[in-house]
Image (cartoon, rainbow, N blue to C red; front, side, top):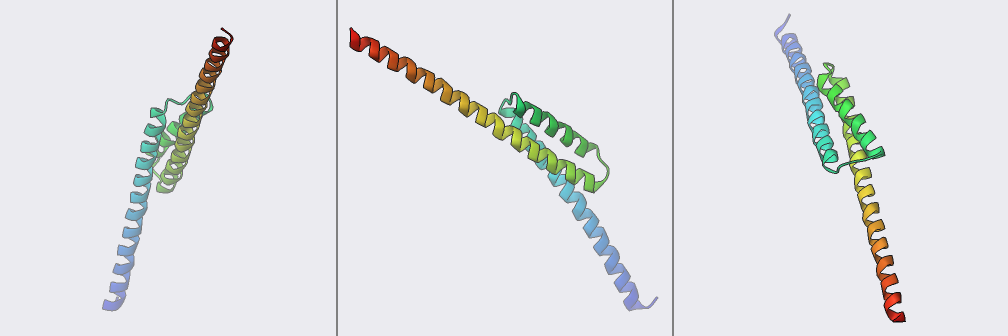
Length: 120
């Protein structure tokens, strides 16, 4: 092997090693992001459909942690983050709906009291 072909092979080997390390790092970052998303969704106290989405996210996140193939880790971690975000959004929507219903009921009660007091 000549010196220039040796340099080319060495450069290709370094490039391959760097791309493999980059893929592993990308998968690790995705798993960490999925963990943060799952924790954020848990803090929203999801119920019903939101809880089901959180369970899916938790399972995908755990599968991503256990997976040895970087492509599977990345795919599962991204799916886990998406389902956790969905669970968080649904939990927040449910909480907002409950708040609106509570305030509407309070307004109705106040309106009834006002009408009763006007009659006296």
